[in-house]
Length: 84
Image (cartoon, rainbow, N blue to C red; front, side, top):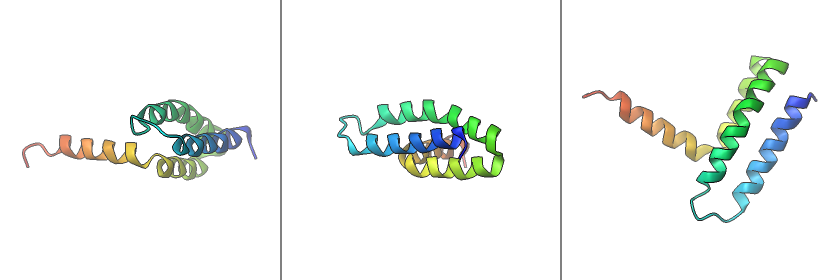
């Protein structure tokens, strides 16, 4: 296992531990922190292991951060409906 995949696994463990903690803001502060840490790790995984492994890690990360992804997709869908 490469160092980048080990870092991605540690990120996944941290995301699960963060999800178990109670939060008043619906875990949004932690989600932004995970996104800020996860994007460089994802780039590192793609650089070290290739794009197919990077896609697998990206989909695993997206399954852990479902609500930020859903909110982003809703926001994009609302912006793209230009008078339709």
